[in-house]
Structures are given as C-alpha cells and as structure tokens.
Length: 518
Length: 107
Ligand SMILES: Cc1cc2nc3c(=O)[nH]c(=O)nc-3n(C[C@H](O)[C@H](O)[C@H](O)COP(=O)(O)OP(=O)(O)OC[C@H]3O[C@@H](n4cnc5c(N)ncnc54)[C@H](O)[C@@H]3O)c2cc1C
Ligand code: FES
Image (cartoon, rainbow over all chains, first blue to last red; front, top):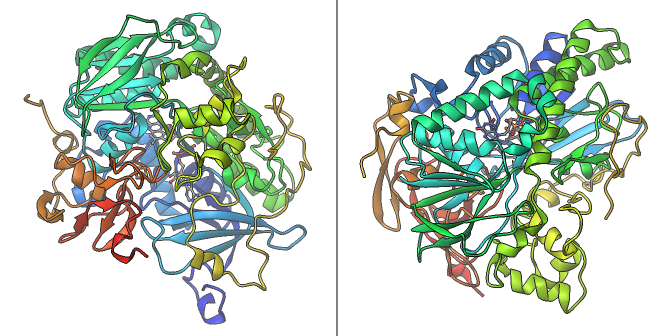
C-alpha cells in the first residue's frame, strides 16, 4: 500500500497529495489535466486504459508501428496537440487504474480519496488510492443497448464496441457488417468499417433524419458537426452503403453466429410495421441506440443530475463545470452526450476553473478565454440537445421483442420473465424486476440491460425514461480481497454520504429531476 | 469475397516484433503484437469463447470496452478475464470458458 513512509519517496505516485485528480483520459480529461497543470497545479490523471485518448481517440498500440494512426480518425491533430502538452508537462498519468469509488471527507484538508484497482482488467495485486484537493470526473459514456430477437448471437456486437475494437485492435467482427440502431455514431462506425475493408450493406436507423430538418437554426449554429456528417455521408456513398431510416433490425438469423438479419420499417414511435421485413445477408451486426453518460462515481456521492432529451441522466453542471458537490467538477459526456470537440472545450473550462479555485479560491468569472469557451460550449450543447431529441428511442420499440428474447445477457433473463414480473407480480420499476428475476444482477451490474428493463417495467408510458439514475455503490465489480484490504482506520470504504447541493447549478438546470433517488 | 484492404494496411502497421502464436482451445492462432485477446481471436474469425451458465449459449466480445463482461475467457488457466482488455502475449493459451469458469473446482 502506498501509505507507508518509505513509499513516500519521490516518484511514488501514491505518496503525495495532488491539487487535482482527473478520472478519465479522453478528450475532456486530457484537456482538463493539461490545462490545470499548465496553470501550476499538481495533477494525477487516472484511466483504466493503457493509453490516453478515451473512446474517440482510441488508437493502435505502439507495438503495431502504425505509420498512419490518423487514418481512422477525424481531427487527429487536436489529439496530437493534447498528447504533446501532456508529455511536456508533469501530469502523473496513471494508466491501467480502474477507479471503483471516490470518497469525500467534509472539511478535511485533503477531502478526496480516489480508490482504484490496477492491471489491464483490474487483475493487479494491490488496490491503490490517490489523494487530492479536487476531482474532475471525465469518465465519458457507454453505449445504450435495446434487445431484439437474436441479439445474443455471436457476431452481434455493439456499434461503438466494433469501432473501439477496430481503432485499437485493427480488427473487424466480420466481412459483411450491417450497422443498426440509432444515433449519429452509426454513420461514423459505418464509415470506419467500410474504410477498413468491410462491406456495409446497410445502415439501419430507427429515427428519421427529417427530424434534423425541423431544427435548422441549431444545425446552422454548429457547422463543424455538419461538416463531420458530410464527410461520413460522402465516405458512405463512396462505399455504396445504403442508409435506411425509420427501420430497425427485428430479427437476427443464424445458429452459432450471424448469417442474416431481418430489417423492418418502423413508425414514428419505432413500432415495427407488419409485413415490411426484408432479409439482408451479413456475417456481423454492429448495433447501438445512442450513448449513456457514465456517472456512477458521481451519483454515489449524491451529485445532482438532469434528464436529457433522449432519456438518459447526465450530471447537472454550472457554467464552470462544477457538479452540485463542492470540489467535484465534471466535463465531456458525463454532463450529457455531445461529442469529442465539446468534451475538449469543457475539459479546458474545468481545468481553468479548478486552477482558479485552488489558487484564488474563486471562479474565473472574468477570464476572457472562459467566456469564449463557454460560447462554444453553449452552441455545441444546443446541437447535442437537438440530436438527442431526434434519436430518442420511440416507445414502440418493445413491440419487436418476443417472449424468448433475452433482456439481461449476464443472467439470461428473458422478456417473458420480465413481463411476468410486471404483469403477474406487479413490478413497476427496474429494482423490483431485478429482485424478482435477477435481471441486472450479473457481472455488468445492469449497465447493458438497465435501460430496457426500466422501460419494460414502466409499461407504455409517455416517455422512454429510466425513472432515476442507478446509484451503484461501486463503479465496477471489485474483488472481495480489495474491499477487505482497506485499512479500517481510514475513512470508511463506503461512498461518502451525499454532500447536498451546496451550490445550485446556474446554467443547465436539472430539468425536472434533482438528484438520485433509490 | 475479396476485401479491398485490411485495417492493418489502412493504418500502415509495421510492427518491429514478428507476429506470434497463441492457442484457442488447442488450435494455434497467429496474430500481430499490440492486440487484446479478443482482437486476436476476432482476427482469426473466432467470435465466441464462452458459454453461458444456464443455456450454454456461445458468447464473445460485445461492448468492446470492458463494460458488458460478455467476453470473459479463461486465459492461461485463469477464468473470468475480460478478453477485450487483456493484451495477447506470445504463447497465451485461451480456452472456452464454460459457465462460471470454475468447472474444475466445482463443489
Ligand atoms: C465505445 C465508444 C466508441 C466511441 N467512438 C466514437 C467515434 O468513433 N466517433 C465519435 O464521434 N464518438 C465516439 N464515441 C463517443 C465518445 O463518447 C465521444 O466522442 C468522446 O470520446 C467523449 O470524450 P470524453 O472525454 O467525454 O469521454 P471518453 O473519450 O469516453 O473518455 C473517458 C475515459 O474515462 C475512462 N474511464 C471511465 N470510467 C473509468 C473509471 N471508473 N476509472 C478510470 N477510468 C475510467 C475511460 O477508459 C475513457 O478513457 C464513442 C463512445 C464509445 C462509448
Ligand atoms: S466485450 Fe464487453 S467487457 Fe469485453
């Protein structure tokens, strides 16, 4: 453990107190870390991954000796710039650190303790802890999945997951890959797969892209996003990829792996239209229904959240990226899905704001750079809101399920079992369904099935919304030995009690929902 | 079906270290250095390396980023490793993980 005096020697990353601990080394965390460090703060940057970059700038291991790592990326120079600044400065980059809880001690000189397990998949021998005066949470997002018949067949992979495996491992899940679900990420994934040599017979999008046309002002305000869409669109056209909107994969065919999918038309509410199914031969399906902010570390501390237009929960943040818990900042997808560029802007605002707080005890209210960044943030947030509204899951999606479809992949719980819990036993929320069926009790702790279970439990409500953000005590399964090894004289291993919203967010007000409930 | 190119060609991969072998259920698989176990298996067309506890259904990588735990494999005798996170190393033996992966010590 890093607490013994001999460990405090120079070079021991755990023996010192940092001004700032940043969790997540994607666009937001990187920008926050280098900005704060350049302004004189001591910074630790923790990430589960071995390399910086997060999801967007995920790239091949140096062992590949890739001479064109940028071939699968937009805007690689922005990343190269952040990486240069990181290498030039003295941020302590702690790779392979899986943070499983963050503790806060009110009134302490060093209020924050960040607990992590180490190793590629958390298999490291010793748990570690990093102490800091402030924390920036930049843990990004994960993909939202909605089940459909056959989605557990090998060859069905997450769309973002296929992208991640391609960017880091230079591999494809198949040779003929249908891309399906909803959200702008599908276009990026299809473009990458096609560029990397896969045939992509179709991109199947449940929403209608006409939704964008109804929001011309927001579109015009963010030309960079439009440019991105045009680039993807051009790449797709060049590869002969067809975009089928208002359609969904309603069945996967195959015995041991994917052989084909059935694509059906859906109505505005994503209800499949009978008799419209068409079979498309393929050997893989990359599927995803948007992204979900990854905020468990914050909600377990009692951070206030807001609901986004596509039914996820994001952290409620003020103009300086502060959460409702003093000393805890957040940036990037944790504050709502908005893309890599927005994450960078927010990371920089947070870095400036944390530096001002630590040095002067105040927010950088009159900083010209912050004003400029905030203008860009507002523009991009507006665009992100429009996107979320267009791709919000329609309430009719559950009609493409049959009773044998597995909802919970870990515990192999079927739609039939969940419906029985709802119809016969009166379950009305995900928690009750979980107790009755074990859905969401497996290894992934309900991350994969949570949205679907909540929706099935709620029945056909006016909104597709999980009723409250999950409040998991641990941000990932932790070996019992790690919990046991915590020093009992230290602050308790349980997450700190909610610290109450001391500062009310002054922008981005929580719309409707304030803070997690059980 | 012919493919235009491979992802490795696209980024101009030129590893200094030679390709190496791992085994999957005894079958040798040659892969490039720098890949996770899951990526190494995908590169050989292997998509499933686990069977589920109840239905005995085949599973492999799904989320690709360490979240879903569908990719659990037995690596060098140790069960329940997330193959999408663990780097492949020369000589690794990967075996299909059946059920909870503790068959050999079942009580
Ligand atoms: C799998 C995936 C692939 C994506 N691919 C694309 C794409 O190709 N194009 C696109 O436009 N957008 C993509 N996105 C969207 C992406 O979220 C944003 O574009 C961008 O990466 C957001 O930046 P960020 O800094 O907020 O978060 P991220 O880039 O997601 O960075 C978050 C970082 O936090 C780390 N982290 C999370 N939890 C912990 C923890 N408990 N302990 C330690 N570290 C932790 C993660 O390892 C990650 O490196 C993808 C999203 C996902 C989930
Ligand atoms: S593929 Fe999801 S955890 Fe490995």
